[in-house]
Image (tube, rainbow over all chains, first blue to last red; front, side, top):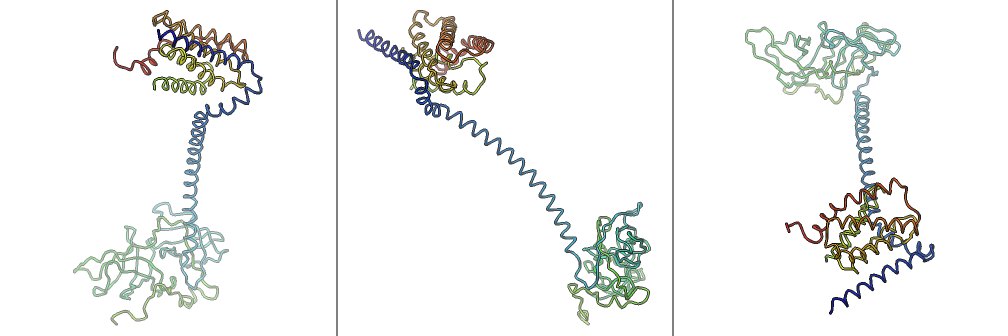
Length: 280
Length: 148
């Protein structure tokens, strides 16, 4: 008995909905659009939200990629600037005029014995001028053209440099060995050399000012049968990787041939070489 | 709860359909027919009206034809289903009738039919998808996935 009543009620309600839909068709168009607008916004909100999220994700990914590329580019630029800054700011604060010179050539057999730099006599470079790097002594100029110079490095077989043990003040003469290191010639057996000692230029030749860092003692083997003490040195300057050097300009008034007066005031203050070695 | 699930399903189908191109099958219509096969007449009619209202929202100008035709479809399917006792081909018949009713109403009251190839492809895909949709949605909403 109840079921037909419920069904009849449902039928009437359903027909009412359909009738309302039909009536809605005849509503003024402007009215329908005005009524539909807020409903449209509400119903399509998930789609709009999804589209917005997807769009922002795409934009975030693109931005992330762009920023990553930018970061890499900036890192490269930063490294380049740091390198240039180090090179520019690494000039040793000595009272000598320096000129920076890019390395533009090397000897083709060892890459370590001879360098060609892009500064010559027109820039004030003269034969015999010491060549250094921020790490230490590199060599000396042996020939000059107007725009280029030839540098004999401290690893060239003909190279000889007077050195001084910064700790014990013992002088010696450094020459290259075949392993890319330096060897001290004629060091008395009783002289004080220990691994780790820093060697600087002695300033007793006519080329290098006193006090330029040269290298570090790496081995002092004990050989009772040898006449002299064998001392091996690792140069501070890695000649094989040098890209630019500094040439110490010899003053016009003095030349290596005419005297060594210009070498007097070249001891670097920060090396702090004591006037009297400790214990003496 | 089941009725709410049916409305939610229709709304989700509407969202899917609103975000795809018109070549796709009429998912809302398929969902409505499955719902109408299991709900009473007033619920089916209201579900149809709701689905039609949603579809009308996506049309450039709110026309109301989808509301009318889908409400009528929901009511009609709920009314006629007992005569077919859920025969498989009845679903196809309902879908075909609903498609015809809908496109006639759209042509008569709405902004005109879409281009014929789109209409044909979409209708064919809707018919082809009908058995699978009925099976899937019936199990999802009404019978569950346990074997009968």
